Length: 367
Length: 176
Image 1 (spheres, helix red, strand yellow):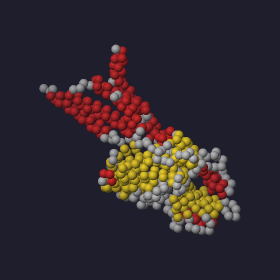
Image 2 (cartoon, rainbow over the protein chains, first blue to last red):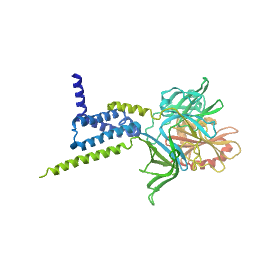
Image 3 (cartoon, rainbow over the protein chains, first blue to last red):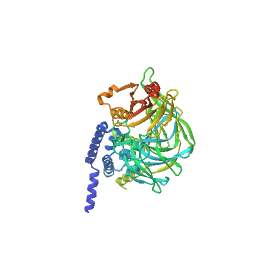
Image 4 (cartoon, each protein chain N blue to C red):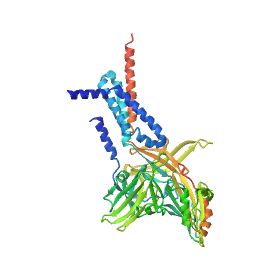
């Protein structure tokens, strides 16, 4: 009996209007904090530490539960209230869509110079350590270890490699300088590392700046022979490496790559201005899309607000550079990108239906 | 299933996304049709002086440029490093130390500096019968400092200097 009372009180609390108002107030605080924190933290970190933080998720989850409880406990299920049911369902779908975006959306970039072809995009907020067997003159065999594994540290045993790697230290951001005689001895024993001074640095706060991650990694053969300890960094140009059993191995830290089953080639980039001025009118990239698996080989035009949607990804015109010879595409994978549209359609349909029914009832009631 | 369970499951699925160690073939990097050096990291673009040769990057170097053979040996190294790399004075004094010159004090730094386009240029010649010379152009772009260093025997460095300064003047900074 007591249990039943507890559940009843909990259900009552979860469906209360006070909870709705409290959640909405908290969301307003989070949004305000997010806006203010963009100056010291930059947009991405401000969003991640406020509205997309565990607290933001909790408030959103409670608000969603509140909406559903209120709907099922308070709203009568009848044809008369069908519009309200639809509108509330749309609102719930909007919440689910935002959770889907926060959890599953992956953003990356694809910088392409004119004539260049790529079948991958790069996430410059993440890194991967690559061990590349460069012995074959026709292609490289690359084993990529994501940063989530590198940050855990310890021995990394990739079955495809004839050696093991130990991640000894990982810096999200680091300043690299040339080592001076007065500096303490380097922990690196091979590659360029012994000449480098690597200092951890706080994360970048500017939206334009990118962190330069660095990792101290030790390579050992399967027999336990040391192959060297390397400082790798996304800020270092050429990779470092060693020879093992007649094969050439290169180690590097680079932006995380997401491979695509198709490729894009930048054929043309246009940066139109209004006649007689330098004011930009339009940016557009004409790309060739090749997907042997689906038999696709066609041109596509990507311009501002007119992305190419293909293979579950959207390619937006994001930036450009190098005297208009480089186009940067923003690549967004969001499995739930249609949910906000469906939610808005449901809300609109629900409101129209509800007021339509009210209007009809009102007109029918007139003498 | 309650919403909390569903959200927990979604979070676990999201955490597992594309985060496994993977091995695959990659084509050797093919230079794009337009770019003279796709292997360089993003940053300033330069025009290789007529008669000079550019070698691909190795180790920390983004590129090495070789002037035409002259009396003695000299070469240009291009290195990009993030952050302030210890400050300009520390770098200048490290170069001077390599040449056997005494360090400069902070107020003397501006007097040792000239400009070539966007680059701040330092030009030092070491002592002795066979002096070494180092001409360094420093360019900062989006938090990364690029060092263009012409170093070698004084005679060879002097012969390469005009073309080197012209190259620094023509550096194209990324418009992004």
